[in-house]
Length: 448
Image 1: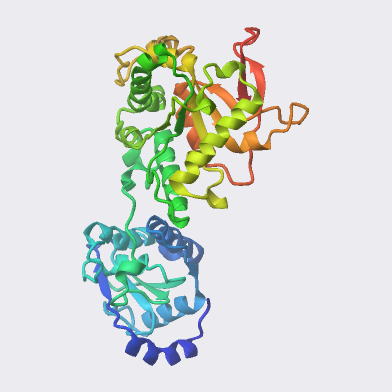
Image 2: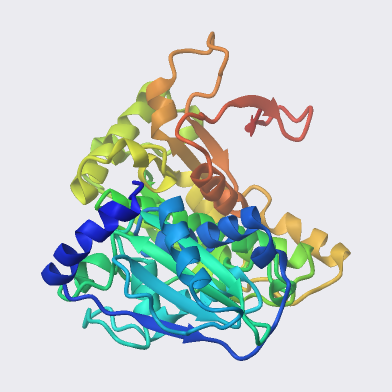
């Protein structure tokens, strides 16, 4: 939405009389710079939009667009200041406005506003002088931003950003400023920065993808399993042996995934800092569906099951899902949380229960020792079913011979989940059946 200055001024009286709006100012310690984010118009604009929309995305607000009218207003305000003087006060214009001075670059200026969220009381939902920049930055109703900058006589850059519709309207904070999910931004915000050189980059990408998944759920009004990753598990084995081994198998599956498997890449890459991996571990949740009386859930050996049997299991999963979250929107139809599930049959239970009680150390060890561990989980497996692929499959004569289910090592659960999350809704998984190892006669699916 583009506003002319005449229209903005015409609206001024109505806006001020109808709403009580409050503003704030941010000033940094002296830090003069000729950084390109200040001196290049394109770099400046990109820095404002990227950093602004980062924080807006974290607080359930849509991205803002650059508005030249707002940018001209900010620039004119700065130009009206005599010479190289910089009056550090608000313009009094009809827009929402944030000011900052003395930061090394544009991104740092916007981040100073965004990080005020640490002091904002979301439950109280009121304006505070210490957090006013943040609340304007993520105000949901705001759609446009435009900024100007000026090099002051003391060598500091002065940033002025204008917002429309304006934020910080008294009485609207609870609705317009929404809380951030409990992901620690250290785990993904500076993924390429030196401060994270000792962290597992793969795990940091996964946390970022998890946040994307959480945001999609918020947009669809779904709170089920918010902030977590993992699968619904259908138990299909109820023999006396399975009844004994089931709690052991599930305990070991959880412990091996959360306490070792998600650290695998960190160990390979020799990253000593495992805190981001621990964050992923904390968010791993399996939802178990079991019913000893249901004939539909009595499939002791999935390796010889028919496609019709797998379709029946898919129906059980979809019935459970509807009961848990209702009908999912098209935007969530490809989410692994809502379209994929695990099946644990007799052989799966035995293989999981046979895992050692003591997990390998997650301390950094030589490569040869890491490789020697691989035999520990050889043969351990669960079954992964993609309900969409099961519905889509119409016979092996298709170009895609993947019928929607495969045997999967618990070691690969995280890869399967997060690779699915990052795919667009237009992409389908395509697999082919091959011998692994080659010539073994043991058929596994691999991605094409």
